Image 1 (cartoon, rainbow, N blue to C red):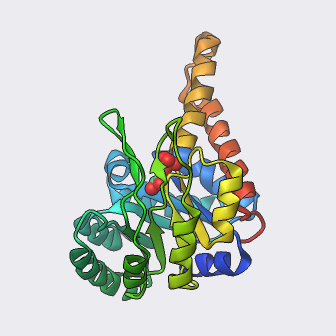
Image 2: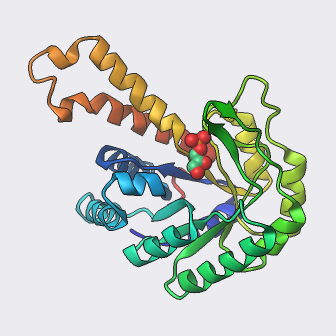
Image 3: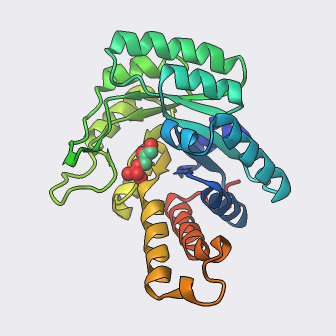
Length: 287
Ligand code: 13P
């Protein structure tokens, strides 16, 4: 069932668990994540970056695929389709294409401009019952081989953005996208606790879910994190399983070249990773 992320995240805050946002890249990813959510009776958020949306043939194509699968695969658990790190223009396009949730990432603007633009997106999205995520304090990650450290968001700025009426707030607490460096200092729980103290019941979003140790994930959830984004880890799972298939020469046996066979191990590997994360986040049987 396609829904906004509003109620599922309110329930997550109240129940002290987190809903996973798993980024999609194609049909296999989407089907793997939707069926795993259904099998585990878990709410789920499908993340779509602007790049992935373009890759899949555009936002309307994404919505056609997801809506078709929800109907034909009988997906009854709550599913949100969420623009990940959207630009101002991208957010407006996704709202038109039928996305049920939007992230407007204004973290690279000044706080004043982030406030103005976030307000405008909230007004357009709310009129259509679409949930909105905003970001304060940029999330680091690899760019041209250089791994940037994750910023720590200013709790007062978080409060300012939270009060605009967003449904969820991403705040940098030392988390980064992609692989964490060997010398990573870990999540900054002091910053997280300060943000939580000022923002109350606002569902907080943890980006860069790949590679964060289980104990840190659990502690973050206990401090108000209600949505955790995972992207790279599904890509690694898919890659490793596909590599194994090819290296074992399976694509050369019989009809092993058939994409339905060639992509099957990677598909199953994504399913296993998503299930593992849903169990860790505590969202199993919370649909
Ligand atoms: P990872 O790729 O590190 O899991 O981060 C995903 C994410 O935060 C998407 O917004």
